Image 1 (spheres, helix red, strand yellow):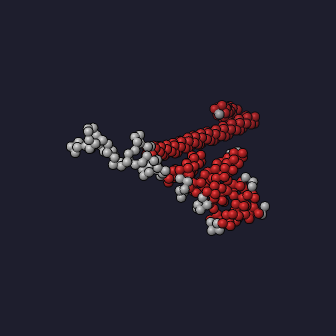
Image 2 (tube, helix red, strand yellow):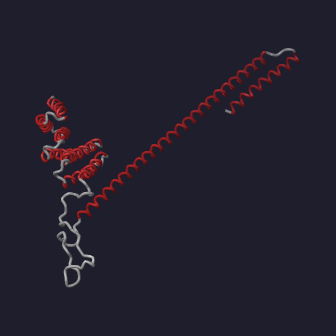
Image 3 (cartoon, rainbow, N blue to C red):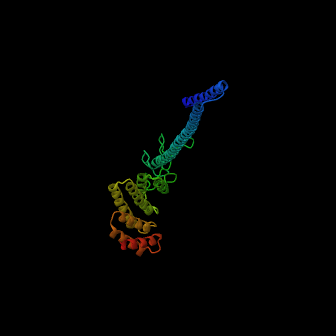
Length: 306
């Protein structure tokens, strides 16, 4: 650009000098030739073109500089936004992990208290009020000597349910449901199975059995999204088995209609429409007032219309 400007300046100077020369010639001879005038005009035109090119190049260069500045600024802003997003994501992950660690720590403390509660005493149990004989010929201790009386000890039979202050059935159920809601399906399944092992007759047992099936169904959906059809089919089969247990083991549970409907959905995904229709028809016939019944009728109509 500097070279173009220099050329333009030189041409302008040449034109000026030419004019000056013509002026001197005019002063000496009294007239200027046409060739001199033509040459001056050519020099002036060339100088104007050079100046125009220089101006265009200056404007183009200014535009490029402005664009590069904007691009660099935008790139920096995008990099800062990306880094900020990463930091926020890591912060959320750290918060989630910290909360999970606190939850697991609390559960560990509770289980430890429960184990201490149900551990039988090391000494043989005595009937309440048993007097331990003191030294001396008599089994009776004088009133002036502190009596050595064993504290009443209950029979050393481990309780079938946690005692007051230890882990309650609702605690295990709620912790398992929290795992499910967070997407920790393996932990949820293990927790609900432990709940059923300990409290098979609890009023929440039917719901616990249902959530095991729901967890397997969610796992199957994850495998489907990941294009892992074989693993998805295995999880769907497990979901069907677990949903069947709701009706078989807890026929009066509130989750029976929902389990029937979800079992039918799993069977549809497994390409077993006949079995799915049978389960849906059972739901419609036996639970006409359930919320899932209207959905079951729609599914039945869709399956029969194929």
